[in-house]
Each structure stands twice: as structure tokens, then as C-alpha cells.
Image (tube, rainbow, N blue to C red; front, side, top):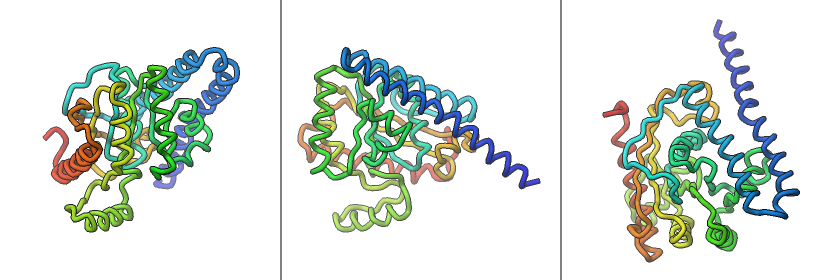
Length: 290
């Protein structure tokens, strides 16, 4: 009988996959048409349409995770104001982190205004990559010399057009994995820093550039720590009901509390990830709500 369950699970995953990604391809088509026929006449209307399309898909994913997937998202920490321009940072354990963060954006009425730092290669992917290209997301090579001009130009666009944003940043630069942790260990030893067990050492340059470059447009940094009761889920795991509860701990920091100098901002982000490491370590084996 187990083989029957395996087959049913496989077909369920296929159905969920197409239910999630088919609308994205349709949205891509609308985005291309809007770029050809709307963008030349009104960039503002073009951005508003893309914001609405992104909010529709991201909002649908958020609803699907909580309702069809049955995931309970427990939020602790600071109360967050609505419609605020912010830089959001989070630890990154797996692809499932992304739709979990949609809850915060939806409640803050910024679900369509998320701008993601993503790997440069993703821009060539249909659906997700193409959609993000139209949304002014930042595709980076994780090399500051190559990324700096592109990032600064995008930030200037946010200012010049007063574009509402939730800048979404995973400062670790990649998902937490054992091979990446080994590389982090070598770096912390070289820098004579304490070892890390549950997060990677954050990449500080992009974060400090974001804080300095968006000061005056963004009001705060939201520092999010994601806790899972077991292993970090995949994107599809959330939709298939394999995850029962997730905890988000959120703290809000006005930008001026991070310091003015680049070195102060970089120290702040490193300190925050050491605190995340401590929180994740202390949470092991402790039920949510305790």
C-alpha cells in the first residue's frame, strides 16, 4: 500500500507545481505586453501593474501555505507598522523561507512591493526570473566590484520615482548547508571570530551599501529569524502540508540606530547573526510557544 501513497504524493506534487507556476507564466505574458505597450507611455502605470501582479501571485502563495498547506506561522517580537519602506534581513535555511516571509509583507500591505536580492543566473529563468526582472529586483553576482554600479543605479531609481519597497535580503548569500558551514568555519578562524553552528557569516558589503544607499527612503531594518521544528522544508513541502508550524521572530531597528560609518553598520549585521546563532541553538528541542 505504500507504493500507492507514493504515487498519490507524486501526482499531488505535480498538481501543486503546475497550480503555482502556470499563473506565473501567464503573468510573464502580461508583463511583456505591458512593457511593449504601456511602459513607453507611463512608467508609473507600468510599475503599478507589475506591483498588482506580484501582489496577486505572492499573496496567493501566502494564502495557499496557510490554508491549503495548513502551516501555522507563529510571530513574536516587535509590532510592525503598515506601509513602511524597509530593508528586511533573515537567516536562510531553505527555499521554504521565501513564502514564509510573505506573511509579514502581506500584513504590512507591502506584498507587491518586495524587491529581492537574487543570484544573477536566476534572471534567465522563465516565470520567477523574468517576473523579478520587471519588478526592479537586484540580480547580483556576489562580487561587489561587478555589482556596485547596478545596485546604486537601482537605488537611485527607488529615490527618483519614490517607489515603495520592501528590500528582501538574505545576508548569508546562500542557503545554510554543511559544506557552506565548513567554509564559514575557515573564515571565522582566520578573522579570530567565535565559531557558528546554525547560521553562516553574513556578507556585509551589500547590507551596508543598502543601509547607506537607502537612508532617507527606507525607515527601518526588520531583522527576522526563522525557526523550524525540524529540517528546513522545500518550497513544495510547505504546500503539501509537510510542515505544521513555523516561528518568526521579528525586531525593528530605525536606520539611524545602526550607525553612520560603514564599519559600524557591518559590525551591527555580524553581531545580529551571532545573536541569531544563539537563538537558534537555544531553540533546539524546545516546543514553540515556550
